[in-house]
Image (cartoon, rainbow, N blue to C red; front, top):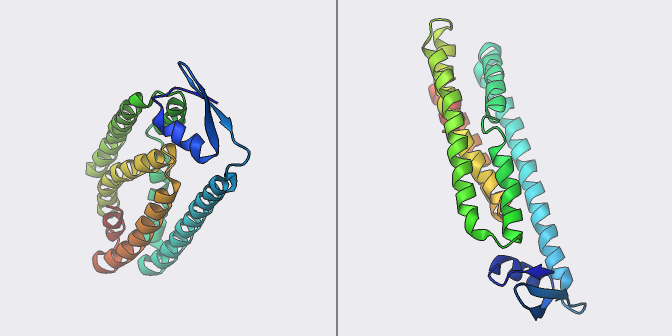
Length: 219
């Protein structure tokens, strides 16, 4: 492997995988040392994959439980409205127009090329574009919530949904950032904590506030 000497993150990663310095010039040349403890690196990768997979299972289970209890607490009419509004959330999550996917691709590539100095700029541009694009969609939703075309419950839900969409995109940015930065262990812990907290808070607020408690639970 040929890596620039100032690319410390890649040098540390290769060193952990068992590569040792072989020659230096403009690039530092590393060779795999066959007697190095390679399984340790593999075990760490497998452990992180298992943690991330486990976290996603917890997320799916929590979503199932939340919808199960919401169906019982809200009744058919309001739960049907909530299911319809969730479609807006799902498609609204793509308001970044691929900016987060581009960041997820560019950050590891730039780090591997030794261009770590441009990574903060990539993150800032991705975050700024994502939030501005989402703000436009949220403004449209909020305006619809002020129109006379919907009943009071639906109109109020659309206004709250605009705020939820902004919060969801901010959360999604950090999700993509942790993945791009290969912090899967931290991402797994955040996913589990946020999911369990959202489940508990949402159900509690729905019991106290009714239908609108769903949206405050997201916030």
